[in-house]
Length: 402
Image 1 (cartoon, helix red, strand yellow):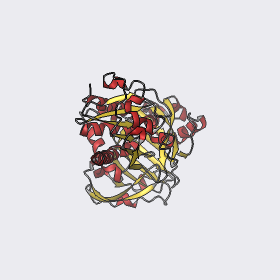
Image 2 (cartoon, one colour; image 1 turned 90 degrees about the vertical axis):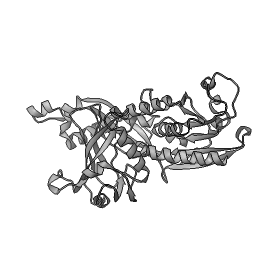
Image 3 (cartoon, helix red, strand yellow; image 1 turned 60 degrees about the horizontal axis):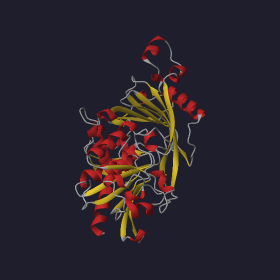
């Protein structure tokens, strides 16, 4: 049973941002706070279009300001013997650029692995970051490819060592770690942020059972952390119309012989093709980026287009046995497809929302802080730990002021 002296903190949303944030708060403040994670869909559930994190590709192509700490954590988690080792894979990655309007000069200007200016080409936009100091061992393998190393139709290219994430496995790892460290999990759907502020877990079926079965309403949480992703567009009391889906579609191929990643950027519009292996032997082939596209099922014509582009880009998707006997065909890869899917990246005009909003008088209560942490677009996994660090700091500052 929870200690009566502990304040209740509710993290709303169980995607990668919510899970990482809940785990961070539980790890740092769990001795004095009751941290409850509430999600409509959990990592243990079947894949669902409402739960974008399960569909994410989640490979790290570079480091921007919010990704420095995240990469360091994930790199450590990918080490041999780590509890999360099976969720991550260190790989050699090559990036190709067909359009000279996509600058790679920031990547080039890295004099060593500790102090350098660089940029991240993300799924949403290209932006520059200031020089930073970070222990990034993957950068020791960075180089610009020679023209003789480039495929036909490619103007320039780079290579480096990075890592990929098996997102369904990793999400369950985060959930398990949160529970092991004492966190509580409740399945529930919030219609309005005031519902959470006023009653906390007592506003949800099954909530009282988390605290010994008491049926009377508690004083409510000391703070709410809103990590609802695209759901924040519809959550009453938030209804952030700056959020929009950036739909992506992929296919998953069983090709354990592919152990390096490749990405081809066609132009600045974001058109790209990628081959991303996972430790399990599955390979993610993509992709697409369609703003404001809410369609919830994979489109057959898009699947075929991805397959055609992926095979042309990487004929090695066909098995070594076939390639040793004859020229592979696209049908050799078609037979290896184990899944196809799509997800709605929670993109936001103006970028990520990471800030505190104060409420007052909700359900007769005084001032209660809501820490918003959503709108990461296609970089949720890549920025997860750094975003959680900021959310934790905002929470601590808010509790000190409340």
